Length: 430
Image (cartoon, rainbow, N blue to C red):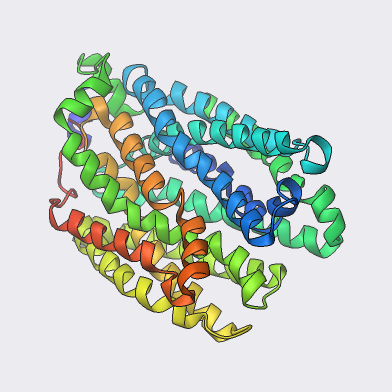
């Protein structure tokens, strides 16, 4: 890759700028929403419902953004492939960040009735549109600036933004819950993380404004190999790669939200854990998650993406069947530790190298659209309903059924990998 780039005069951003610009969007993300949807939104927006139904409805609003994300990936993917990565990333940050901040100002049920929930769903939908264009742009800023032998490592930079954002968000919730009473948290405390995200949004916009266009897109523009109709070309020539990539990623998404959003609701209502205890558990596990993202991405650069990810996906199949047994009994600290620690070893191994794999499935001219649509279709399949389905399965069949949805997607991921070639040595400059 470096030899070909030398033939064309391109301007590179510094490594620090690339890391920050690619990471900050996924750090902003909306991890505050998952925590708030599990712990506070049932009482703020659905107090007229039974506790179980309120929790299910609250978690369904969580899934609204995942339905919107493919819409965002279609919209931003078109502009990312036809106009460039930089401009599109700035716009996606504005959309996603603006909607995230707006949630902090929404009135609850006691002020405006069901309109509060409708406004919440609207903001959540707009969030999803913004994030639909965010991830693929972030990983392309990273990987299209990467040395040829470090594509997975650079692709891990935006992936590390996920645990960073999750850690900051849940750390803030933990501090707020120690400083405020439960009544104050319901009244205004839950709003603080959404409003504080404005700081990261401003920083992100500033960094991205000073970002250079990626070398590979500059080269494509100078060689006149971009396309004005990326979506048409994508679906006519690369639809099989979209299907494979969706199922490669689907099980990963189901696992992430089963590990992070669902236990905040279930463990605090059925297993005897306090919300603060669960936040501490998750913050510790998230550190492990970040370490695994980086180490397995470096491993994927050495031995290949398929060996690392197929092994972890097989591990996910087994984990989905056994993890309910970790959670048996009331306030089972050891079981919760095993559930999160083992789970995030697998999760970190799955999540890190994907930042390179999905873009490597597509050529430069449709890479923004292809990677984004694939990633966000996986979000719909794997995460949109995972917390709600898991809650329903337990209510209907018992705790032992909690992993069935994740099991089905994990098996589909194994099949997808078995039909996909190694992507490590593809010519990423094409």
